Length: 259
Image (cartoon, rainbow, N blue to C red; front, side, top):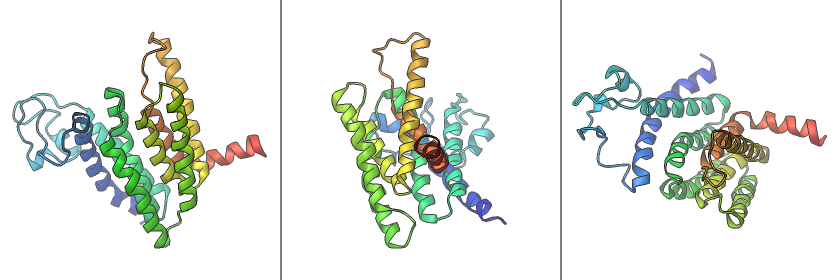
């Protein structure tokens, strides 16, 4: 069996499990509720879900998208979030070979769908996700480097300061950027920076491009220029683009414009 296929098969159940957890985070974190307890319940009738009804994607399919107890429809958001999260985790397992790098990138990307949904709905990026990330990722990278992983701590620190600090300046001089965006950029910067500063540059550039396109699209459909447009989804999309294509895009840019 090919190494990449083996990594993908190992990563898939983890990705689905994390995706299932993230569906809980999407609904509970904005309300200040615990993501640990109580157990998941039907949003319509409040009945606690049985273990067999809480298997990522599979349970939704077997139940035909309806609650076993009351028959109320279960939003497709749940299986889609699980599938997208799992796809990102599997993608990280295929794109990278070092187990340490796979874990770091997969953990980063697994948060992106949930963060995007929360920011779109509530215009916040929860501190309960950001603060543990701001501590956990640097600690993980330090341990990984001590154990021989191919990560660069100096560039991780530069990525943290450059991306997070850059958005902090924007947030301080404008009203269109929130501190949640600053923290998310710092997290993206430290993880992708550990792989190379080109990844951080691509993440920032892609976020700006997607954000500009999103703003133009909002104006086209009639939204006011003063309407708040969450930037978190564009940061998340930029992180995904950089994680999978950052090295090639950075190389293309340097060859095309700087050489």
